[in-house]
Image (cartoon, rainbow, N blue to C red):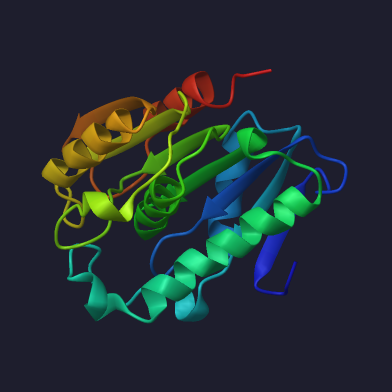
Length: 206
């Protein structure tokens, strides 16, 4: 793992499960790692990549994809490298979990849907698939009932509920078991209820 990645929890070479935590715009790997203490992930390796200049891509996730290049493709590649490194430590995809907030949630959803497989689970605290529209031809694979939790506020200044709904619809079409929860006027934050849902739906598996 390179220096742009923070790790915590069980060492990767000893862990059976790994959680990739993806921070939001303007935040850091250290910030997103702090969420783990509220999650049932005591037996996980925790891996948090750090975005260059604290942002995964420069503009809104709803901007045309080419406007967010080359950062967007570099960020997808960065997550891919993390997944490969985890697998090289003997952890299978079905024991790899993803969690992100805001821009990090968008990236987590985008990466996993472009590379759909049976993962351990996906938690998106306020996020949706990336682009000026949902380009179905960008996504392939089958989630094979991977549990997904998406929580968001209505309204949310950054993430319109319509995109969350479109994301849920496409992921379900690709075999994901999606639970979506819309919170009236929650604001751009992570609520205790979302944490509880993530623990109940995603991190309760043996």
